[in-house]
Amino acid sequence: MTTRNAFPVGLYATLLLALCWLLLPEVLRPVERFLLGVACLPQRALSVLGGAPAYALPREHLARLAQLESELRRRSTQNDVERVRPLMPAALEPMACAVLTASRRGGGGVPCELLLDRTYQDLAGCADLVTCGDVLLGFLAQPGIGPAAADLATDPARVLLLNHPDGRQVAASLPLAAGSTLRCVVGPASIVDPAPLRTTLHDDPYRAAAFAEGGVPLRTLALDAPWIGAMPSGLLLGTSRVWGYETGGETLTIGLFVELVHDPRALPQVVLWQSVPGSVPTRLQPERLPARAGPLPDQGGGRWLVQGSRSLPDGAAVVQDGVCLGTLRSVAFGQGLCTPFASSRHAWSLWLLPDDPELAPLGIYGEVVYASGATAWFRERGGFQGGGGGFVFTGSNGADCPPGLLLGRAEPDLARKTWRITVPALHGNQRVEVLSTRMSTEGR
Amino acid sequence: MRWLVWFVLAPQAFLLAGLAASFGVPLLDCGALVCMFCALFADVRLLPGLLLGAAVGRAMVDEASIPVQILVIGVPIALLLPMRPLFDRHHWWWQAMAAAMCSIAVPKLAGLGGLWFDQPSASAQLDFANVLFTAIAGPVLLWPLRRLPPLRALTEKLP
Image 1 (tube, rainbow over the protein chains, first blue to last red):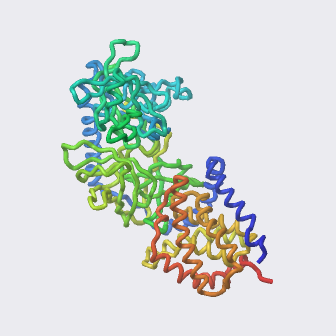
Image 2 (image 1 turned 90 degrees about the horizontal axis):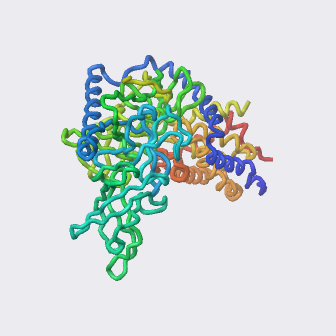
């Protein structure tokens, strides 16, 4: 064997091409879609042998599903609104908005922008405050200005979280041990900082430098100057995190940071405050494309070849009677490859509705670490929160996979510190729907 | 013609292995089998086409995209290929060793690919039962396959 054969240029060129492909995926995405589309055609022909499509849920269960969805909305809204209502001006009315995506890395390396399921136009009568419970999350962007310069009034509204580099800074107060308070300004930290927010301009720098306690809540401070922007007092911003060096048993503080209460990726819903009483909100809903799913015998927990009447969107949810089966990778010829929730290993934002009616719905973010058949073990990023079992719905997983689609039943697995999520086990061809971003409206 | 047959059959082989696994047969790692064929027997000038066909097949049964699959399958080939003259590739023992190495390397690289390129997949899980089965069944399966189209036309012709 010659040296040339042992080190073939063609092989190395292919590996180099693969790296370039990964750097510029959009350029070669049509090639990938075509290759996979062609490879799926024999399976498409074979799927005819699988018989007529079936439904996932018996009809009597649909009423139960509708009840669960209604309960999720009711309890979420109650939890997100009631705690903050006494802090907000009486003239403002709450409006719950679903979060479609959390994107762009901001302070602390966590996402700093949220995309909502309402357009700027529909939120024109709202104050710019965005809350969740008694927590101030950020501010509504204005189309055509700053980070939303490219947005139109008809685009989904964007929320700039407090850790956004171009976000507003807010005045805050921090309770100290002696009963006094330390006042400061809270703004975004940098991406490499240990927490998303950082305090500056302390009213007493000496006491700020001596402060060494973590986990202390910081709340907004109302200012008398209205030109700065009306800010209610008492909204929670986060908890303190002191960053510094240990020197002889004491901490030499070099930064007083603020940890967020909610991971932005785990937020399925936020609350905006409208000043127009009685206004009926408009909710943007993806279109539902009818499709047919046939099982693909993969080497894991089963995948689906989805066939639609036209091109299917990447990342879309595949839904059957309100139950989300998984997300789709679009390939050519109106086909898509659906990876079920249990077989997927990418990160998911979930929304847990606990069985205990006293508990508020919980947003969790993480990934499936192990699956056996239709049961998946889901590990939360940032630590296992625990709690009781309940039904689990999709959270903010993209415009084509909106919050509130039922995934299955979750039980805490305390030994593994994960959630054990059981999803419906399906066999044979299925009649499904694929959600598409071509927006339609409801509630007008 | 050989390429047409390869691009038609290679992706379906990955699905066939999954189908066999659903009937209780231990899972054969087709990615490792392709690695072994390319590293030991394939005509080196044809490796890019062989790799692309196998990557398309693996992308059908795995969450990661085609370029990640090219790296997952191509890197073990690039590492094993220079060793081709060092041992007797027709010896069953060496073939089993190569199959075992590939069936360990492929999931490990899938895991690394998922981490680096944010495309995690379930195939990154290493199962030693599958490694053992691939090490035993790989050479046995490859012996007739090398004598049938399309692999017969893609095998290195010795002078």
